[in-house]
Structures are given as structure tokens and as C-alpha cells.
Image (cartoon, rainbow, N blue to C red):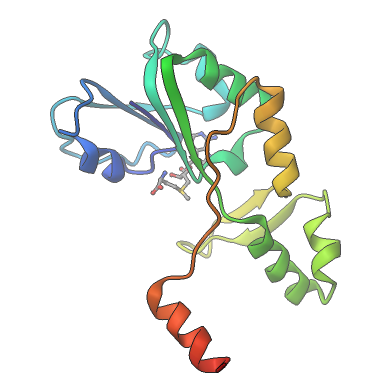
Length: 180
Ligand SMILES: C[S@@+](CC[C@H](N)C(=O)[O-])C[C@H]1O[C@@H](n2cnc3c(N)ncnc32)[C@H](O)[C@@H]1O
């Protein structure tokens, strides 16, 4: 199992023992768990350079995870093509990404524009990271069609797509606020 943009590797560490024989986490930050469990290996590296990353050469994986780092891909199709080439037969990629409507709503409120304008804008946007006021994140916007087209151009087939769901608590609040 390969976890691209794994952060400190904590999520991967939780999966240890679930049947895989080797777990590899890649992240550009290099802030990894100091005592990873046996079988878990970390590589400090850029997801834009997966094809030439020492430690990954010649390896294939049954599962490749992209849990929220995909917005940092400079050439998204190339990144997905590289990941596809590293998949074992019957392997699959699991990719999670913030629903683009969320960023569009935030930008529309901030810029006093409309949701439609922001959702379909192609301009890169920046915002202060949630963890440090010294770090500004810059991302390219995606629509859902953009994402589907990236996967398609990389020769991938989408098996399942899941939209964010309200938690039970949030759902109950919504129903209370909108009785009937
Ligand atoms: C939102 S965090 C998600 C971390 C982890 N996957 C999780 O779900 O908890 C995004 C991660 O992407 C990493 N990242 C950002 N740019 C990257 C790049 N060019 N190459 C590899 N990792 C990158 C960041 O360091 C960060 O750990």
C-alpha cells in the first residue's frame, strides 16, 4: 500500500495489520512518526516526482491512496498516469478531495461574488493554512468535471464516487431548523 501525501503517516500506521505486507508513505514535509511500526516505511519526496523517486523504482502497489494532497499536483494527469503505472493488477487508487463547492462558497463570501462565478473560475487561489499563520496555501480550483476528466485522461475508470454526507448530528440540526 502506498500513501501519497501521507502527512505524518498516522493513518497508514492505523492500517498496519490489515493484511498488506508493506506500507510506504510519501510526503514532502518529512514530518513522519518517529517510531513507525514494523512494515511501514517513509520517503520524503514530492508527489510530482513519483516516477523518479528513489525507493519507489520498480515497485507496484495494490492500493495507492491520495488522501487530500491531490490539489498539490502540478500536472494532475501525469501524476495519475504515474500512479496508474505503479498499480498492481486489480489494484486501485483511493483519492479523497475536498468537495470543490466548499472552496467556491468560501471564495464567493470572501470576494462578494456568486457561487457560480467561483465554482467555474480557473484562477489559482490562496488561503491561510489552518495550522500556521506563516503558511499560505495556493491551489488550482477543480470542478467535478475537471476531476473526472483528469482520471479519464490518465486511463483510469471511476469505480465509485461518494459525495460528502451530513453526520447524524448535523442532519438532525438541519431537520430541526427546517421542520416539516
Ligand atoms: C491535507 S494534508 C493530508 C495528510 C494525510 N494524507 C491525511 O489525510 O491526514 C496534505 C498533505 O500533502 C502534503 N503535500 C503537499 N504538497 C506535497 C507534495 N508536493 N508532495 C508530497 N506531499 C505533499 C502535505 O505535506 C500534507 O501532509
